[in-house]
Image 1 (cartoon, one colour):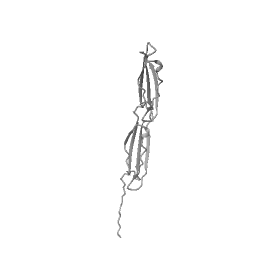
Image 2 (cartoon, helix red, strand yellow; image 1 turned 135 degrees about the horizontal axis):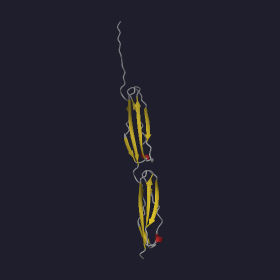
Image 3 (tube, rainbow, N blue to C red; image 1 turned 90 degrees about the vertical axis):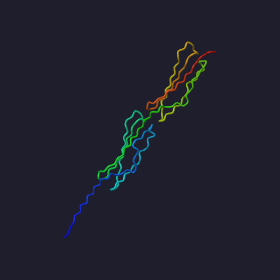
Image 4 (cartoon, rainbow, N blue to C red; image 1 turned 45 degrees about the vertical axis):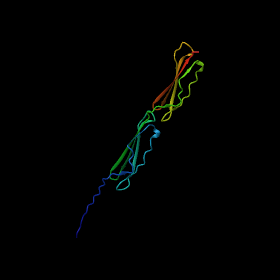
Length: 173
């Protein structure tokens, strides 16, 4: 009788492979511009492999300043793993922009001063808070002074811009 023994050792050392690799770093101005996470699948030389996805968001003082960290991980039955991380930085540094700014004006009478204009503001990420103030310079005559009007727009991340209108009242008639 003849016998033979063969020992076959199966040792899977090959990690799974992702179908796509997400871009590692993204930077956007507004939360509304953050792309949805990519759909990532994985294949392995020894069979199907599930992909685990996690996403963490840092605390922020406003909705348009934060860091989103996304991680995709696939581990085969033998413990071989592959992972990819994507860091999305949301950072609104753009101040609001005034659209219809009133021009400086020269008038001859106090009674000709128009009411403060309703100014339009646009912001790259949405809502803004508009503050209005006005003050007059000292004068020795009722019809001779400067009226300064200031509009300040601030977005929800603290970016702000201001415009000024100066109305000069000078009765020379």
